Image 1 (spheres, rainbow, N blue to C red):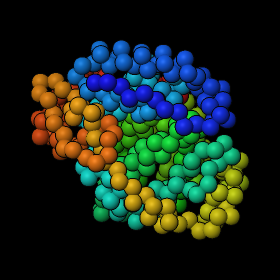
Image 2 (image 1 turned 180 degrees about the horizontal axis):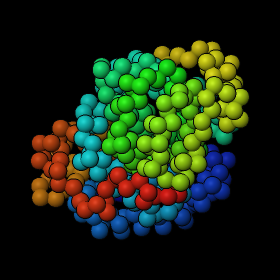
Image 3 (image 1 turned 45 degrees about the vertical axis):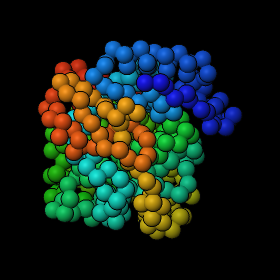
Image 4 (image 1 turned 30 degrees about the horizontal axis):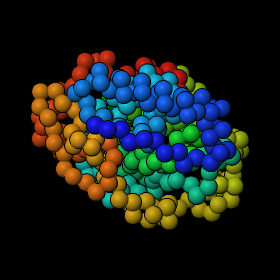
Length: 328
C-alpha cells in the first residue's frame, strides 16, 4: 500500500515547540516514518494505515522514540481483539447516553500551556443503566477525536475528574480486572500526551479504588496524578480558574457540557481499517464494512464474524503490558 505523505499545518511557533519538546523536525520525521515502515513489514498480519498524518500522532505521543511509537501503534490496532465491544456503534450517537449524563466535557478554552482540558463529573452515574466501559469508550472517543488536531498532538491534554457523590456501589465496579483494562487502554493504546490527571472532591473510599489502579500505572503516569479534594486553589495552580466552571472555583459559569455535546454529536465519526480493507490477519482475513470517513480501524462485529476474537499474538504484544512503556 502506498503511503500518504504528511502535510504540516502547524504554525511556525508550534513547530518550534514541537522541536523543543519532542525533538521533531523535517529530518527526524523522515527517518521516523521510514523506520515505522520497516517495522510494519515485520508484522505482515496487521494491515497498517500508512497515512503519515495518522501515524505522526503516535510518534509525537512517544517523543519520536520510534520503538515506543510502534508498540503503541500495534496496541491501538490490537485493542479490537482485546476489547471488541469498544467498537460497537463507534460514533458519537453510540455514546449519547453518557454525554447526556454530562461527561465527558471539553472545556471551551485551553489551559496556560495551550492544552485541551477534558472534564468529567462521575457522581450521578447509574451502573444499573450502563457499564463503566461505556464511560471509558466515550472518553476514548473524545480524546481520539481531539488528537486529530496537530496542536493537541504536541501540547497534549489535561484530565479533570470530579468524584463528588461517588457511592460505594459505583466504586465497586472498579475491579482489578477492569482497572487493568482501563489503565492499559489509556496508557498504552491511545496516541496522546496526557499532561496531567486531576481529581477533585474525591471521597474517602477513592483511596481504595486508586490503590487498585496504581499498580497498573507506569511511574510517569503516577507522577501526573494530583489529588485536590475540595481545595480548588490547589487545582488552580495547574488549571486557571478563568477556564474552569463555577463548581471548581472558576469563573466560566456552571458545569454544562450541552453546547459542546451538541457540536460533538454532529461529527461524522467512523472507525475504519487501512485502505486495503483489512486490519489483522492470522489464519483468515477479516473484511470490513465501508464507511464514509477514512481512518484506521474497523468494527467489532466484523472481528467476531471473522472468528478471531480469541486469536491474539503472544503476551509480548499484549496491549495490557502497562509497565512496558515507562516514559512519555
